[in-house]
Length: 430
Image 1 (cartoon, rainbow, N blue to C red):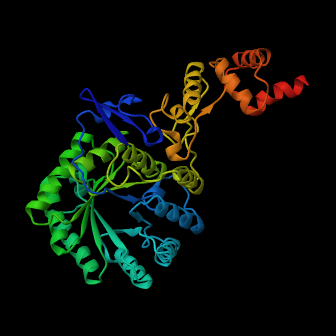
Image 2: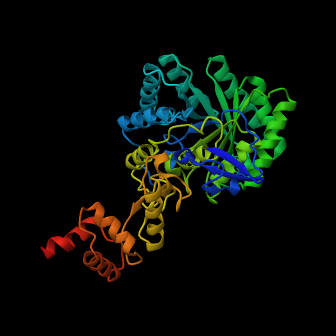
């Protein structure tokens, strides 16, 4: 993102339109007014599609070959880490995790794998075994409920939590595997409980902790307060090198704002899943998070190539059996598609002046940056601009007679016309 200042106001032009100079900016961007991120280092990402994502009751557990394809795409997108499964749950999951780790090792991926496990030996030992077999570090994401309601339901005392924390962490450290200690329902947990649990894990050697908005309870304000509290607590205890992860859900539709707020509060790594798949309403959508981090120019994302992001989301959709909603941000089929006359006319005028202008005149996201393109269709709300555009695409003469014929047909229908339907109007006439 190129930032311009003029008359104490901030303008910008996206990289695709960087031929514009400061005397002729394309857009005034209120998002950049008085904006200065507190996060000056590279933000890391952890992809949970193959673990938390598969907890959605509407998904299927995909075959191994599709999991391997997805991991390759994660690597191409420069996603830093991935939770590749829960090997202690089933034999299939164990073998899938083992094969993914072998892929990461054999192809020299930078992607850092981790595996979910409860704070019990039966879950942790399979991860240790896999790590030792393949000869690469596999982080144990050991999770434990932490909120008062969860403690009451399970009959856990504070002492029990601390015992489980200490034993799980020691088991990992003694077997030379890294551990990220995860508290479930962190956003509804008592600060003193969190402090004791996290410091116990850090004192025993955990190199990372994870704050989880397990039921999607948090607001951006609450996220900032929690992450700030934990960062300050670690600093005061001399554990400022312990990595802090944020794991969010979207039950209240706030996962993206919460993720951005967690970053501003100092979180080092953010979790997400492709298309936001996951239990109940799902997780923070990794694809939408990537889009926002790039457009906001965060370190490590400003110049990142995300042109294959469409392939990533389409594979997630295919492999878990969940369709992408038409109005899904950026990756939905309607994201850069219009059948409205006013919008189509403006896009066409913009494209006529410069091929890239059409990407921003009626879109807050530049389609080409993410492997997409602007689409103009014909429907009951269309005008002559739509018809001329589509007829030119179909190599049909956009004469007044032909345009009026198509436009009248569109007005008599209650839906957008397919290209084949428009062509048929003229095939029949011949």
